[in-house]
Length: 472
Image 1 (cartoon, rainbow, N blue to C red):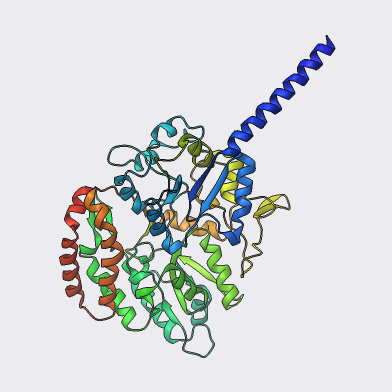
Image 2: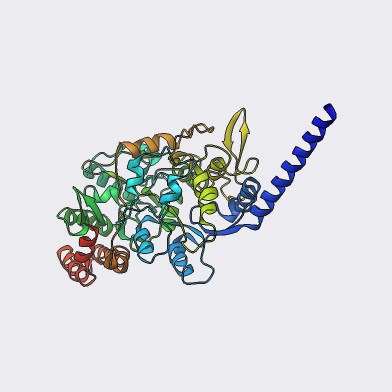
């Protein structure tokens, strides 16, 4: 009897190993391509991430990551080619266009039968639905938002308080420009920098206050903030500080990269930027370039102003993908498993991106970073996790108060779903026309009323009214 039991046990072990090997062989044969923007880059250990993903799933993951500033352009072109990606990360302003082109697969059936999404509230799911009631993209994280950072050591050097009103803020910018806040005896500082003429509502909050440049949802309908009454004094404020030389002169052409580098370099003392892991990045990189004496503080929005929390980037599955169920299960759904995969997508690989230090999970230093900064995420920042995972890493003492400040002083953006005219003309209005008009106003080429009249004329030619009608 004992011999028979031993034989049965050995047979069971053989069958288990055989089945496991067969499963691994099947999974190894499966691979897919993911177009991703905010995943860690090559110099941050992307290969190590891919290898760990394979160990945990048996799936070969190929990541394509174009340069950040060209990401959506390259992604859209990829869908005209034969080897378009099976899954991709998409900025929320592009979701409507991609749905109109019938690129993404509806995820509703997958979500209903998922292992890890059952606890998400209906309010989250409903906020993602397109005009047909279906969900085509799922957020990987909380969308986050921007806050205004100020060089606290400059304020202290000049005996200034944190600004609370626009008048306070103007006086700070004036002093940062004319009163040698860094004490080097050289006239080489300015007060403020912004992105793309202040046309993007994430970054312009300190100047726009209650005005909105972009189309946004207000009191139950979509409206164009650029045509509202609040825009006139907002443009007056921006033009004033630009023409008085209180800002970085490169505002009309700044990207996020050039704007933040001016802050890191000590050229300017105020920037509005992301209130997430960038809170630590901004401090550490500015200290690395400018010196260890640097102190930076995130401030509440100025009186009459507010911050904005964006809709998060979304993961979409290409409707032409092979085995979309497997892609959803192992790449989207398992990012919320509160276990191995969520840990990988949040913290990265143990021993490379993180390890236990004095019994606590801590990010490690990135040896390839010229500033020798620590890692902050793999794909999903720890502070932006959207399920109720009890994370093993302590909250970052620099990031946590910034995140609290943002959450307590912000308004949530909504996803936009239009139709034909929205798909064709929305981005041209927001990313081309508005920055051009604002640039010409602050450069003195157009008076404000003249510029707004020109905008209304050209926006009408780009079917603004039809876009608003579609959104509403």
